[in-house]
Image (cartoon, rainbow over all chains, first blue to last red):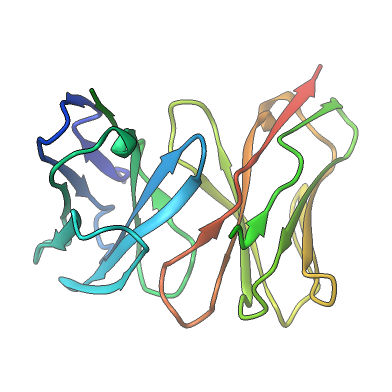
Length: 113
Length: 113
């Protein structure tokens, strides 16, 4: 069974640009969560989707947004990029909600110059 | 305000000995706790969990202990193996809430042959 797939794996953007990251969950998994990992803050929750609905959102500015499609695939978007947005963005999926047992992808490494 | 703290950034143990990783939390609403392990260039992998109605959960070489009064949990690995060398993250959530996990910043475990 294929794992969680994230694309692109690496990308470089400049300040003010926007970026879209994609996540394909494990087949059959309907819940998708996004996390940001930085050396200073560690892993921080961004948002969670289930059946195309956002169930929860972390403490990030409105520049961070996401969505989930009917096939459970998810995208997250960051607009007006700032240097501090440089991070590893991790997508995780789970079969059901409220399990906490997440299956993570390898992440998308974003560098903002 | 760090709600989940792993005060030891690193730990080094000899193969065959016990590894003890510690985690403290401040939010008394947390009632479900998990440990994840992360190898370089990979996403975190779920290891073991415990709900607040228990004080111990075992899975093979891995045991998690929860002390609710002290708001403290620990992960014991016995015996430790070189393949256990990884970064271990403690995470907490409010059961029945969402897939929003609050992570500690991790402890890098090195098991020396």
